[in-house]
Image (cartoon, rainbow over all chains, first blue to last red; front, side):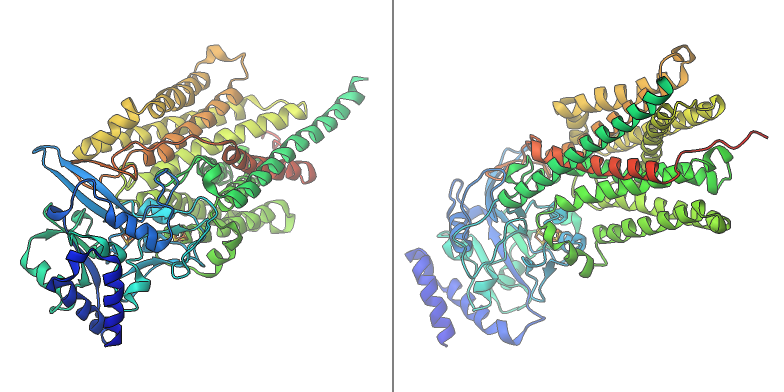
Length: 237
Length: 391
Ligand code: SF4
Ligand code: SF4
C-alpha cells in the first residue's frame, strides 16, 4: 500500500495536474506495483505510444528523461540522447506525424547479440540495458541497433544521478527508467507527458491497461520487418 | 671507399627509419592518452559515425595481414618453390600487421583499460568475440608455422602447419567480413557478399604490402630480384586486383538491384561528396586502373612499376575502406521506410565526420608498430628470401 502512495506522490510531483485524475494512469500504477514482485520472468515491460496525441514541437518527454537520468540535454552529434522527438512525413501522402523515439527494448536485441563482453543484456522482464562496468566502449552495439537508440559518452561526466550510473567511454541508452520501475514507478517520459501519449505497462499481463489497449487498437512496431519484436509499439502510424 | 661507406650509411638509415617509426608510435601513444583524458570528443567520431579513422587503419592492417599469408600458402600448400622461400617473410609481415591492427582497435576502445573484460567475459553470439579468438589463434598459428619453417628439424611439419594457417586465415577474413554483414539494418552492410569480398581483397592488399617490403629489402641489400619470379608475382597481383574489383562491383550492383538500396548507392557512388570522389578517383582510378596498367603494360618496364603499383593498391585500399566504413555510416538509417524524417539526433541526415589528428595518429601508430616489428624481425632474424638454385 505504501508503495502505491509513494508512487502516487512522485507521480503528483512531476505530472501535470490534469493528467493524473483520470482513471487509466491510476490503474496502470496499480498494475505495475502488483505485477512486479510476483511475476518476474513473465513480465514484459513495454510502451504503447499514441502518435495521434503527440504534439509536434512538444519536448516534455525528452526534458523529463534528461532530468531524470542526468543528461546534459545538449544536441551536438557527440551528446547523449536517450529519447528524441522525430517528425516524420509520409512521402506519398504528405501526412505528418510527431513521435518520441527511444530504445525499443527488442525481444531479440541485435545490440545484445553483437556485444563481445555481454555488457549489453536483456533482463527477464524485457528491459535491455548496458552494464556500465563491463562495457569496453567498442560501439559495435551502436552499429547493430536499427533504431539509432544508443549514445556513446564522449566526454567526462559531472553531476551524475546516483540512481543512474553512467561512464565516459561506455555506451548507454534508454533504461526504461529501470530504477523507477523496480520501485514500482513508471518511466519519467511517460509520467511527464501531459497528453498521455506514452502508455507504460506489462504487455504480458492481460489485465494491464497496455495489454488491453494493444488488443483493442491497431498498433505497429517500427521496422517490424526485422522481426526483433520491440517492446515499444506505436499507434497511428 | 664505397664498399665501406654504403653499409655504414645503410646502418644509419636503418636507425633513422626506426626513430621515425618510433616517434610515430610515441605520438600515437600520446593521442591515446589524450583520448583517455578528454574522451572521444577529441576525435571526429560521434553518435552517428561511431567507427572512424582508427577502424580504417585497423581493418586494413588486419585484412592485409591475412592476405599476405597467401604467399606462404602458395609455397607450402601448393608447393611452389618461388613462394616457399618467401614464406617466412610473409609470416613475419602477417604477425606484424596483425599486431599493428589489433593495437589500434584496442586503443580506440572507450575503455581500453578493460580489455581484460573482453578476454574474460565471452559472449558466444558476438561476431566481435569470435574475432578476438580468431586473431589470437592467428598469432599462434603463424608463430608455429614460422618455427616449422625456420627450425631445420621441424621442416617436415611446415606443410601441415602451413595448411592450418591457410584455413585459419580464410576463417579470419570471413570473420572480419561477417562483422559487417551482421549489421542487417544498415544499408551499406548486411550483405552476404562481404565475407568473400574481404577474402579476395585481402589477397590484393597482402600481396601489395609484400611487394613493397620485398622491393625494399632487395634494394637495401643491393640484390636484384629474379626476372622470372618478378613476372609471376606481378601477374598474380594483377589477377587479385581484377578479382577484387569484380567483387566490389558485384557488391554495388547487387545493392542497386534492391530498390531499397538504390538511394544508398546513389549517395555513395554519385551524390555523397567526398565518398564518391574517394571511390572513383581513389579506389577505382588510382587503386585499380593505374596499378593494372603498371602491371600489364610492358612499355612501362623502365619504371619501378611493381612497388609503385603496390603503393597505389594500398592507397586505393584505404580509400575503399574509408568509403565503406565511414560513408556506410554517414548514410542515415532507414528507421521509417517511406517517410522523410527529422530530429535533434540527425535522423534522416547525412552524418558528418571530420577526422582529427589524434585518431589519424593512432591509426598511423598501428602502421608504425607493424613497421617496427617487421624491420626488427628482418634485421635480427633471417627473413630475407634466398632464391633456390635453378634446377
Ligand atoms: S532498440 Fe537498439 S538498443 Fe534498444 S534493444 Fe533494440 S537493438 Fe538494442
Ligand atoms: S560498446 Fe559496450 S555495450 Fe556496446 S557492444 Fe561494445 S562492450 Fe557491448
